[in-house]
Image (cartoon, rainbow, N blue to C red):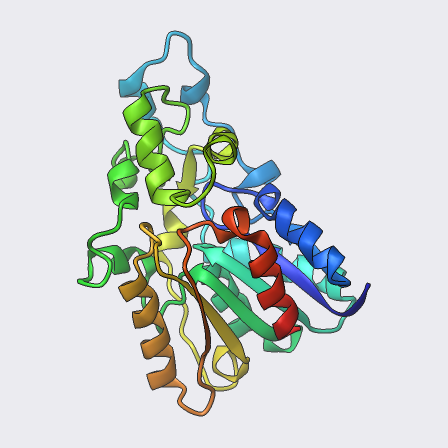
Length: 280
């Protein structure tokens, strides 16, 4: 393995496991890569007691405060920066983020631009300066997203964006698949759904990052659009790119297009790895 280290950051509800196939493909290309768990996710997720109750109580599930309600972008950035120091051993890395992982990438690159040589947003949130990610789904470019329909509780009451991936109702399983895994084979989609956490921290969606020319604006970036994404619609992806390029015209976004749904790391990991290796 050679070259600048590559660090992969998943999106809400997922974990480092989501990148397994991409890691294999990158290894085949001779690239060194590490997938990490985002704060409040994966092995760092706090189990939701309501999800384990028998018999299951849907009212309790929709009202119980989340154990990760206080995990915001500060905590997520601190954890990722710590990971980058260890993985990069003081040198910069290529940082890849999916979905809401993109908001963490943005905060890290603003706070510690010397640690990042290139940012890759894989159909990810790339919020404008001072803009909270939670505002985007209600904008015209994001209103046809299917993600908001998955929420089963009041985020203000629980402190989380709560979904119910353990719901055995075929209709609910179909909704999750359509939102997250539209072009993923049925077996892989079912396995991935079974691994999803129930909560994502509301604070990460309501926090924002002020961007500067010497921080995030100075780091080269690539955005990988996914034309069939039903969680972050293509029009919203294009809005992220347009806002970034308008704010930092001296550092325009490189764009690569995929005909994929929200999770190309599962449906076309070989192509995702090729794109990342090409950046490297």
